[in-house]
Image (cartoon, rainbow, N blue to C red; front, side):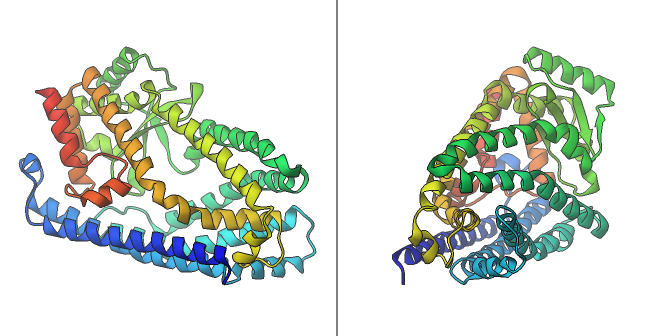
Length: 414
């Protein structure tokens, strides 16, 4: 066996085993605390709601564990098992020239992975989410959403894929320096276009109608020195009972968006506090920092891909008999996540720091106790587990544990 083949299998196996071990710890921790609501939440969350959150967390974790195993086997089958090579050989009979042949092979592999993941998405939506009272989507809406996502991926990602493959073929050994600005322009363009052109394809966005709440929100936005295209309500209730709020867009296209399900549950002061938290991410430059890190990571990834694409062993070890730019791109995209998975705790830690900083910003511009009350309602209504496993949380959670977060806010309020 080739040394690189063995390395890939060991890393993929270790990452998969670690995922399953973390899942088992999460299930054990949630079950151990199922019968007792943590004291800081005992007045706001009933034992029945706490049990529901525990059962929901266990069900989601179990489904994710099965998905992890299936995905690992699919990656091995596509690489070492010869799946990509077989698709490549099949499409060679069509007589397509580069880069069209490469693009078709890449899209075929991506569609195969989508097909593998589709049963899990269906089960998650219509069985798991429905079982706990969250799903409001219909088979027709689910199918329409899937078709739109596939068409958008082809319309937006297709030209990008063609451009990258052409640069890999004709750009020489420094093609990656040319591909990076293309990628950066793509990311910025999609980020700019999402609120105005992309998101409305899936949801209806309407201006916030409540005059009193709108005045309160606009006052907060002005105090924070934030400029946006307005405050909108999205019909998230068409698909789910979960509530959320977020910002979207860049530059002058920034928008504040509330789920209609969120506004049904929170009072005006709580909505204002949640908004202050989201504003904190922008005022503290978290969004810009994440975008810059993403672009820097893309540059490093492209440089590594360019080097690997010149190594014959890279192809031979991962099941590709005929080296090609599209094969290098696919192998890198499929193999890299197994290696980068071990850096997940770093990204999660950085995200948790941002969340705590945004909480502090909100406490300085709104009512900290109102934010704490809003979060408790969201934990309850979204069936979020209040007692995640410590190691699982360290590895995955992008938000601080509920006990830590609420304690800090209540201390600020006091």
